[in-house]
Length: 404
Image 1 (cartoon, one colour):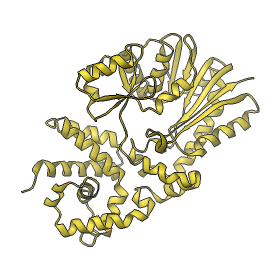
Image 2 (cartoon, rainbow, N blue to C red):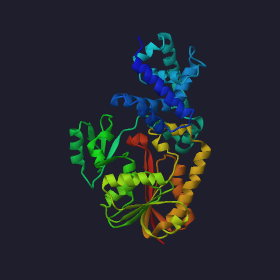
Image 3 (cartoon, rainbow, N blue to C red):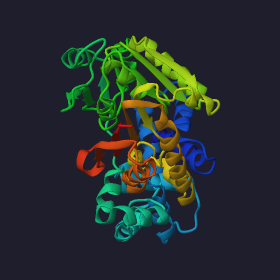
């Protein structure tokens, strides 16, 4: 007898998958939409749907290759078939037996194992990305892309303006969440996946969700209370809030971004966090940046990038990226470095950071910038975070000092 709940889940995931891949909608938006459309789902149902939609999107190329290689299912184009294949080869879910005969299951499993020798298919990435990764990272690429195909951990950043690690750990444990400490001052990690946004501690601004690698950027900026800091690519403000916390909510932070709505969200988050030193300003013209020339003690340039270091969180991005888009991103990075760095005063510092693992977006950008600026800045320190070695997102950061 067919499990109707499982069949319904498969159908909804298939519809969501089609919207992501054929409709070119973001994975997060599609996931949120379908969860809202199914208010009767409990926390387990919501979690299963969101996680499986993410994983099927991640493994799309492999699943497509398995079905097309299968004798029984070849040329049968169906998002539903790919979802069922995922449950078979990646989850080993026995309920798939209600839809596939034993012979078809064995055939699909055999195809899965045969395809493991082809890295681009086995790791479910476009051929151009596999070539680019190998060109830039050499022998390291295989273990990095393998790490980026794992389910991301959920890491919390403690808001030290309101609590501390021990107190938050006790409180979340009391609320029923399984949480472990991490070897970083302000970080905790969920030991078991749960809807942490439902916790009272979150509503009261005691923590934010922020990967352990991302949490290293704000301390790397070397801020102090009372400084004038500019976060020039602030986005939703995760690092902005962290900087404010490190400054003990004393001084001034100017958060800039091209998107007004992101700055609005940042301010909402700052209210929840009890932060009052952030001012937002949309970058509507180049004059916004020019007026800040020589004004910043510290500047954060968390620039747009390929996002390859966070593929485990955004697996749909690899199906939208192209080599041409990455080249355009690199040009934008160089432009931001040249123009925005002028906001730093003599004796001030700035950090250039990306969530990419490609040297061409990281070390090579900084070396090119230093060669163009003829001794105006010196490189104090740079740091690369490997997903395979750290277990967290891939990140790069470089801190530069203005000397003249």
